[in-house]
Structures are given as C-alpha cells and as structure tokens.
Amino acid sequence: MSEIEKQVTCLELSQQLKETGCEQESLWVWIWSAVDQSYILALDKDVNNNKTGGLLYGARSYFAAYTVAEGLNRLPCKLVFNVIGGKRKRYWLTILKIDNYWQIAYRLDCRGVYNEDYCVEGDHILANAVHKMWLYLNKEGLL
Image (cartoon, rainbow, N blue to C red; front, side, top):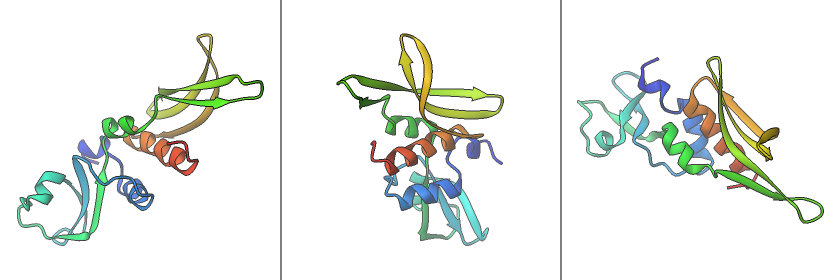
C-alpha cells in the first residue's frame, strides 16, 4: 500500500460513496488504467487536464478518493436529539485511535464525562473510518 493510499478512502468505499450520491469532488481519484488493467490513484487535476502520462482512462470508472480533511468537513460537529420532557441530548464528534485502529463516534457529553455513544464506525485507515460515518449518517437521514 502506497503512502497516499493510507490517506484516502479505499476503492471499495469510494465506490459505495459514489453510489449513495456523495459529491464526486476530491483532490484524488481512483480511475481505471487500461495500461495496468487495474484501478490506480491519480490527482483529479491531472485526469481532468489529460496529463496522465499516456494512461488511458475510462470515464465509467472514476471514483473520488476522499481525504480525511474532505470527510471531516462533511460531518456535523454534533448531533442533537430531542428526548422526552423537552430536553436535548447532544452528541459530539469524537476521534479515537486505539492501537492502529481509528474510531469515529458521536459521544454524549454529560458534564464533561463521555458516557454514551450514539454511533461508532472504525477502520485502520482514518479516511475510511470518517467516510463510513458519513455513509451511516446519510443512511439514517442525519446529514
């Protein structure tokens, strides 16, 4: 796995994001290379400006490879729910790293003590974990 592949969403997750209608704007893209007969990472500007060094790309096989920053900008910093009695629960976006595993969660802040998670998504690649959370929130209608 190349260094940039550790910084962007994997091909499978990028495909899922496209299928759910996530905007296909990113610095990086997964694109089909006829030369390599596989998907490769390329800079979006190079693909769109046809500066690809002779690689032949098929437009049908174009998926945004999102960075961590792009994903975090898509996520709300908190989720607020009304509960019985007119009170509100506020869950704050939290990022944890346990060993080599990233967790993205929305955690209830109860006077400075986080004691309840609303949802948790994780992955060994931070960009994947962040975008898995986006997929979950999108599916639940929370975006």
